[in-house]
Amino acid sequence: MNSKKTGLRLGTTLYSLTTQFHGREYTFDELVRKVAAENLGPGLEVVGFQSIRGFPEVSDAFADHFRGLIEETGLEPSCLGINADFRISRDRDLSISEMVTYHERQLHAAAKLGFPVVRYQYPAGPEVIERLVPLAERLGVKLGLELHAPHHVQHPDVLAFREMYSRVGSPYLGFIPDFGASARAVPPSFIEYFRELEIPESLIQLALEHWNGEGEAYPRRDKFQAEARALGANERFITEISIIFGLFSRQNPEAWLEIMPQVVHIHGKFFDFADDGSEVSVDYDRILPIFVNAGYNGFMSSEYEGHMWTDSDGFDKLRRHHALARRVLGNLSEVEHVG
Image 1 (cartoon, rainbow, N blue to C red):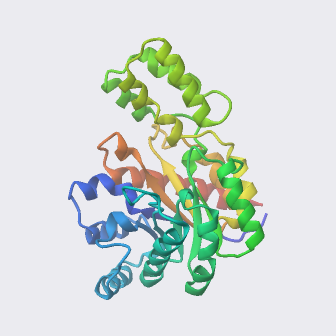
Image 2 (image 1 turned 90 degrees about the vertical axis):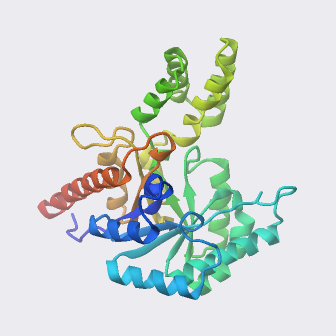
Image 3 (image 1 turned 135 degrees about the horizontal axis):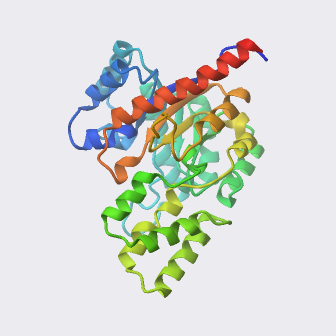
């Protein structure tokens, strides 16, 4: 095999540290500096509306400060998370033109801060994104559609973007796989959270049975809900547990190969770790080699989303994830050198 060093580079999204940031344990600057000090870079992903006051407007002063922070820490801006927010108005959806303008402001913010990629959301729709291509090309900022559960590479919503991408043919149109879409299990900590809510074990197991079933996620969710209601289950419990169908999907990891040439960033989603350091819900020993062997060149942001149901230390989780990723990548490198 080729002994060329892999192009997959590690990084962190500050979204992983939502609990620490919202709890005011750290300021934005302190989070960035600690990510660097903990060797959780070099890539740094930021969610605009979460971390930047006044976003998508970015002042010259903040831009200068951020660039100085990047120079100080040695981190590299990897991706800026932007929002679709098509229902930002209380009485109506935004028009296509309004959506384009809304996204243009965020693209300008990304360029001003030095981010080469933006993560956009599928509700933006193919028409809006197509109209953004000339600006993206002019600014040098790639548009990456996040493929997050319950979506997958063959989902009708995604196929609409893939068709547009093929027709437009711009290298500034890409995808951001989220590994939560290729989960092998619902995170144990989430199941424990349901138990702490005193959701009956029978209802939890019924939901897991449907989650492990065949077909699209939301039809499986609907079947679960119908069966749970027929059994007289508490409606609040049904609603609470139904979120598993939108957060975790079971797409075959090899399916990512379909869009590999257009992958511009990766969300390395993770939740819980076993005693041996492996991730319980995402098979990194299987999934990372797919991207490495396909020649992916870019960052993988370690993304922890457990803040939705636990108060776990995000930094501890990030350390574990980086250790796991380094082990898998190190083993691949050893195989290359042996080959």
